[in-house]
Length: 297
Length: 265
Image 1 (tube, helix red, strand yellow):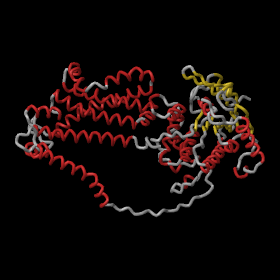
Image 2 (cartoon, one colour; image 1 turned 30 degrees about the vertical axis):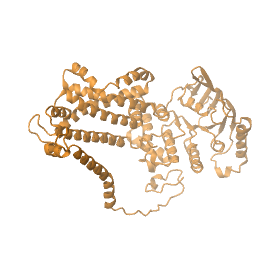
Image 3 (cartoon, one colour; image 1 turned 180 degrees about the horizontal axis):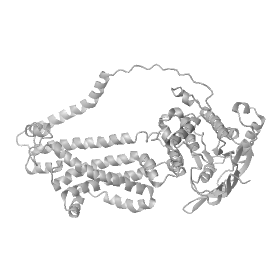
Image 4 (tube, one colour; image 1 turned 30 degrees about the horizontal axis):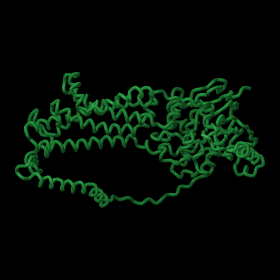
């Protein structure tokens, strides 16, 4: 066993440390900022999708540029809806606002619905993962309920809440909770017996076991559930808003369709895609931070 | 004088469906305070089950485990376990892993500063004070096991249970940790039960070696006293007559009388 040749040698000199270690300084290679390498890496990541995008746009332009075509080509999208693209946060009136504002309204609903689903989903998943009887009783019901399409819940929730805002939030909640529950339960069932033994020897109570062991050990599973959940909730919000109205991005599409502004719809689609992509990345980043060290041992 | 730890005719069977497997039969053993006892046997003979029964992680089918004349049948920090695969929580640092145990056991009786000193004292004892902020993934296998030992010692257990603690380590690291374990035992006078399948380790460390027969329904086949003076030095012992005799006795038990047979499962 090597003696630790570090600055803390003085502290280490315990009862068994009869020899002394000398500190051998290792030559450290000076690190200077590698601008060229960074540029190459960025180019490798950014250039290929840009090239593909350019190809798609030109094909689209060619396919739809004759006057009788049913859909607008990219040039027309720019001509008619450039304001939506370049200034997301304009405000001309209560219903005439930039897409950035609309996305924020939708995100707020997602935050409520998905936040609730995350908290309740993890608790329910913990219950199912821990208790065989809770699993036997609840799992089959969840397996059936999770296949119900989001919008099928909407009429029922409108009837129950008598208002479109809580209904939309409920639809988000009920759509995104299932993967959270199921993944959490699987994660908790997979907690190694060693950790349970440690908890037993230390006589951790249920609450301590939940937040000191369970949540941390199951974190990789929980976060993959949350990631699926946030994707589903973003899918559901657009559909729900089309039906419930308001100022969200979903309603904007419906409104644009009713007034035949096809170019606006195309811009909104791009917004939705980019925001969904960012939501996914955000949750996966959070997961990477929280589960640091959990997976590898 | 009553024994410190008494295994009073304990047995263990596992039942799965209609099939019942008897793992341990009628185990009787008394261990005195400060004694170092090894349990040796072929794999699958129920050594670990026996340790789990003492730890309270499994329940006896019959008989009783008595610690200071009190029956114990649930796990508790008075019987700290050092697990074979260290079982450190990977998301906690070395310090936090030990702190989890210390906070739970001494949370009410020691102040924050006293707990900190106690954690550092135990980590220093296993020479891990330099790595308090490392996570288990960042330290070597031997270091992890030392932290596991520090965590167990920090609980101030009445009995320290070691479940093949050095089994997963390379030979040199193992020897080093065995020496450390002997010094800790000499300093603190802990009562220790160690599961092992390494004959040299058993003879070097133990006051008594409990040899298990092959399962199913394993029993204690023989108990060997190791009358070697402490402190023991592994190099001097390598040619010591008593040491060699003890070693031979264990080897004969394991390889002549109770040869490992492939379990017909």
